[in-house]
Length: 165
Image (tube, rainbow, N blue to C red):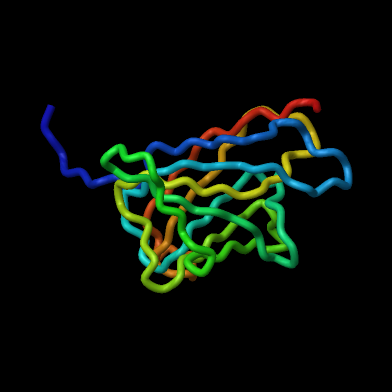
């Protein structure tokens, strides 16, 4: 067969969800447990946005739309010390109407390096019901608008089973 023209796939690699708690959420309880997502961007993100979409039965913990998140970048040379982004470099927010969508705004000039391994840790409340693993989506954008025109990388990763407590 003949070769055909192709293109680079713009996607995150090494995407891994690491929940601390996989038990279902009790009715009326919105307190969360830590969730870490590790990823390697294909494209550098400079002063843009990272968006994490959980299944709609989950809720990111927040107070009036502000959430807590830590972001780290690991050295590519295998060194042991990670760079922890300062609170003034990243801002975490949740749309109260869509509590399963987390937005991480990068301050002007702050960069997620292409090819470097990063870890984002935040708080999540699992589904109220037992659920099989469902897809989560990680996206990055070159601006805070999160529009198709500013889209950079995207990856879907299968989440975890939510079980009885």
